Amino acid sequence: MNSHIMPTYARLSVTFARGEGAWLWDEDDKRYLDALSGIAVCNLGHVHPAVTDAICKQSARLLHTSNLYQIAAQEKLADKLTEMSGMTNVFFSNSGAEANEAAIKLARRFGHSKDIDVPTIIVMEKSFHGRTLATLSATGNAKIQQGFAPLVDGFVRVPYNDITAIKTILSENTSIAAILVEPVQGEGGVNIPDGDYLTQIRRLCDEYDILMMLDEIQTGIGRTGKFLAFQYNGILPDVCTLAKALGNGVPIGACLAHGRAVDVFISGTHGSTFGGNPLACSAALAVLDTLSEGNLIAQAAQKGDAIAKAFNDKLKDNPHIVNIRHLGLMIGIELDQPCGELVTRALEAGLLINVTQEKVIRLLPPIIIDAQQINQLVDTLSALIQELTA
Ligand SMILES: *Cc1c(COP(=O)(O)O)cnc(C)c1O
Image (cartoon, rainbow, N blue to C red; front, side, top):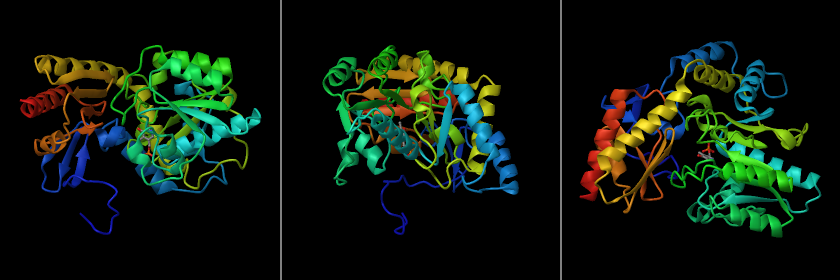
């Protein structure tokens, strides 16, 4: 542990030296199977050749010029992103929190345009939207907010997957400008809502003329078996935020708008020095080209089903499994007991996993994981779970 780095993370004692696909190697050349993908970032696996090639070529040509000028790669990326998502226009940022900051600012401007004095956004319990002041205020986790008062105003909170609670607030509170929600809650414990949850939210947002804003930072870019999770519902949100896997490891975020959200930001209302720079956009373009050329997104759905089924088979007689849930390659195995120690035990066994909400094993393997690696993941982790719960 380096004392010159602020101790904001309780890091595991391993340093990775290189990676390839679903594999990582530490400094002693021990090999690990990565079932976390740098927290849903390296969806195409480590050091994907198309991304590496794009970064190398772009870095030899031009890294940065600022948004005071036209940026060809940014324009191409915006075209491709809107084509693949059905959204209309994009603001580029460098991270997920910044993409959500853009969405929150957009919602406030939209509210003021409707003469709402204190535009308010409905957010969910157990949500995660980032660590900046506005996004941690939107986040439904007291631990993340602890010590950072005064928080940013203008959020009201309801339980996740509860349409009635949203309806109640909408009928009572005339200051609501938007609803911000994750299609599947990641940090909150891989919580998958009812199949018509997003469709119902879409209807309510239309009825009340407010913005439907989806945080797809973790669910997006093929992770759930669709390019974006809302595509399961055949709807379009007004705002959608992306980051994590968009650059497969190169920092980039995006706030996409459609419908009544398209014209809210005008010249001078938002900005970013780095946002959408040539290097990051070239990487993201390579990611989107790779995803749309092959059948990788369909594979995410198939592999997710296969992994969940394999865990169900292996663990069906274990009474400590509450349930195994997944949407594509967003997989949660909930135990009836705290299981954080599985993370270090798995690390020793050469496997990278995550535990969230103390009792939920969260798996976010790369979409390129192969059948043999899936077997290794299922065998290794099932054995560790059996051992822990024995
Ligand atoms: C990771 C994440 C964020 C924050 O992204 P950063 O790039 O860490 O700022 C926001 N929302 C969701 C759903 C996330 O998973």
